[in-house]
Length: 65
Image (tube, rainbow, N blue to C red; front, side):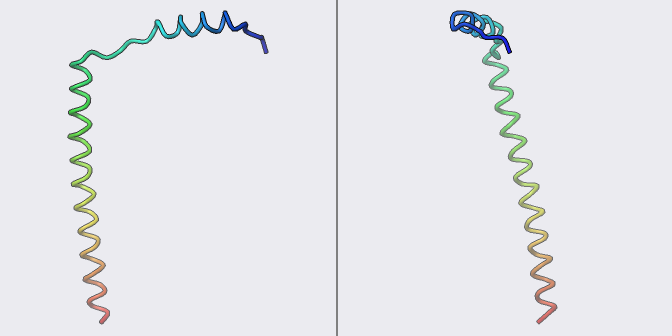
């Protein structure tokens, strides 16, 4: 494995950091809105599934009495 001097390491880090492309403000807002919408939809979906299965279990336990 090749050894890298601290100076070379810092230069490589700066070169890689210069390649970073940050999203625009609009892209960030749109992505954030989409994440909030999708997590809300998934939360409602799983809440519905959980409620349904909870009802089924309660119904089956009621039959067992």
